[in-house]
Length: 624
Ligand SMILES: *[C@@H]1O[C@H](CO)[C@@H](O)[C@H](O)[C@H]1NC(C)=O
Ligand SMILES: *[C@@H]1O[C@H](CO)[C@@H](O)[C@H](O)[C@H]1NC(C)=O
Ligand SMILES: *[C@@H]1O[C@H](CO)[C@@H](O)[C@H](O)[C@H]1NC(C)=O
Ligand SMILES: *[C@@H]1O[C@H](CO)[C@@H](O)[C@H](O)[C@H]1NC(C)=O
Image (tube, rainbow, N blue to C red):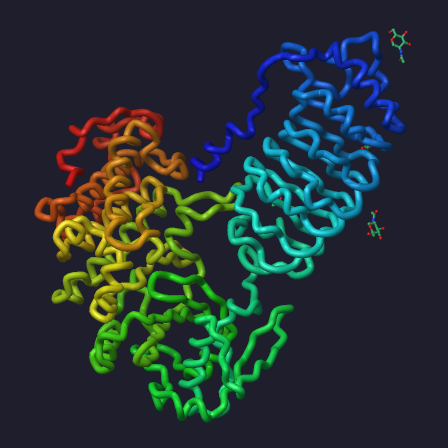
């Protein structure tokens, strides 16, 4: 994240070029502007006999060009004469903060070169025209807080490419928050009358920025309960035997097909302003359904777990967590308050029922503090549900890559070390438990590493290779993006090691391996490029994630882990470390360098800036 902020810095700096009109030449313009104000007593120093650069509230650059007009706390009112201000073409910053201006927003979009604009703490009111900010492409900061604006937040803000601070709190804005995609450094819409879903791109912003509205939901606030597609299963069951069919229909529902069944009724149940829908199914469809599990039951694969039945699960209020490569997953809140994750898998219909159940039972015997345990599953021929505990703290991917509210710290080195050790242990356990599988995990990536509240990692989506349809697995699973699969259509027990290596590089650099997002074979070239770029091109730049820059005396250990990552990413399988070696090396890592180590490594500053490393630092190949 430190990096992201750094990228924005140039936007926040003010650059002024060229000289055209000096402060002197603008005296008449400014006096005209002043005359449109009422109660301008505070502008006593605006005297034509004095150079405007010395007037209160005016700022000139060294060359005398006016760049800022800052008239704050002056109890000014009257008209803000924009047509006159247009004659100050180099005006970058304009502030009328804490005055007594009233009425609608002035036609600011004529000031196309403005970068910052403060109108907070006035008495502006009324709707803001939809094009009020159209074309203000230099605008980085907009402050309209503490006024009395009504109507929707203007959509003309959406395309402003440089906007990083937007302060709209304490107004009367209503409707939904436009779908901002910006990387805001400041965003505040608290105390308005907004409702609806908070745009996903704003999920990392402090929740205080959304407080005091009528009905906002979604991250960082609590989940939206209602909106149609986002509600899972949804079913109140008439009789136990109907349940399986209900699931069937829910599936159809999610595929976007309107269920034709006449007997589907939707009961609306009021939640907290949102609703959860329940479909009530008739018996007829169930009987006609060609492929239902007559028992309609959940199979629990562990004995140490509180049981619940499918009925309870289907009744639970639920929320879509996301749609992964296999299918959607949902968070379901059971009546007893426990939260479960339900993952739907469609591409698992090439294995027979018995084989599937056996494999699930096998997964159910696994027990390790770094594996998210499978709790139960539900089997239908063309669809499976796997049920896990819900882990509150999100995934490693979200911690590394999602936007955070400013001030919220990133993962430090000790936390990352704890995570990678846990990942290594979980992986080693899987390899021990499944000695006959080539890919005991098969799908190791940062979004499949969940973090509990102590940041202990929990692996998910492991052990699925034997039951996922082969073609689909090759399309989406990480193991099949490995160099050996690309080159020779094979995977080996070292393939999981390669995934571990990518994860290590991602963890250290904070960079997202773009290929995870893509599918199919072509994507591999990208990953190779990525690995190479991390080591080669960026080697002289900031190799490590800036969020770890507070690390003291751990630099040597960071470098050791980087080397381990590289050894795990070795393209040639014969030269790649095996898992045992990788895990042993990871276990040896410490939070702090020992004194001996420390002297031999670069100092902190060098590590994060410009130590020019050579390949001699590493005695292994990074090429294919
Ligand atoms: C401007 O300054 C001059 C000289 O300091 C003074 O005589 C004059 O009254 C001032 N004018 C205004 C409008 O304050
Ligand atoms: C707003 O301006 C008035 C003068 O017009 C001043 O007395 C007051 O302290 C200012 N308020 C803030 C919060 O700065
Ligand atoms: C804000 O506007 C509403 C009507 O839109 C009005 O009732 C209210 O008094 C105004 N508040 C202030 C502080 O001007
Ligand atoms: C947003 O504004 C509200 C009201 O002024 C304030 O309480 C809150 O702290 C602000 N949010 C942030 C993140 O600064």
